[in-house]
Length: 356
Image (cartoon, rainbow, N blue to C red; front, side):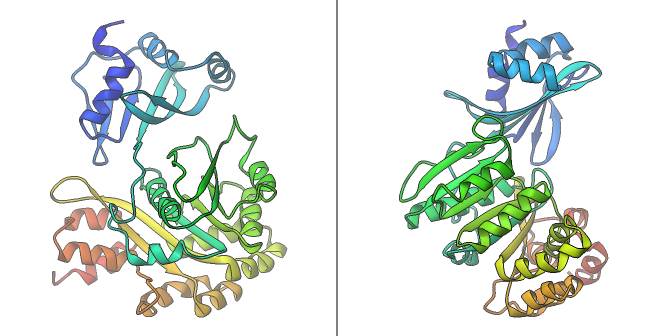
């Protein structure tokens, strides 16, 4: 193998260029993602054999066997003096391909993320469900890690995280962390949640609420005195509520709406938008469950929640994505093109910024 195509050197390049991802796909040079955009490295075009040599150098025998049986592999890896990465191996045209995402070793604080004050208030709750949603690569894991870090700095709690794979690894400061990796430490999210309630947790993080069993277990945990954090791949706060309800059959939905109306604390729906000066900024839509919102969830009037988010902002901490985008445009942090590209209500946004 050419020395320039050593996998560890490529992963060091991710750090050196402040990229978020590295892609190894045959018939292409190695590519990295910087501020959301792909860029090819000035290196030779890869073939399947080259990628296989690099990829397999990072795997245990057990992981190799799993990949060869499933043609898919998710794992996280810590490379001394380089960093921690989440990796996915897959097949394309019968060749192995790899995607690596860097996970910062230092867990960010809410202050470092310039998070709103409401975040520090939310994590003080004793029980309930806090959801952070958005597309892949929107910074959900980073936001959740910062919220758990705040608990770790300020509260004595037992925090169980269930992830596939484990991303941020927290040192025990005031709190005690039990990190569980789906596939190696537990068979599934739903199994881990079932047993988590017997492990004396105060806080539970669910890496992804991807099926009915996991959502059901999360709602039960949130109702029974635990603070539960979870993620979903949805694009707005109201859409998140519909997604959860729609997982259940029609005759079960009234019960789920009742559970959500009492246990849902908030939904933080976010995207990362490129900044004019380089880098990216989190644009967060925040829905806080107050009595009016709880009533709309219970009565199957989720479509009216957006109006509540526009109205009930003084003192609640609620904000819509539209308002956040307009605010960032006024401050010249993001461009009009970026705002329209990432908006979930582009027509409304156009009307709102016509005079900016």
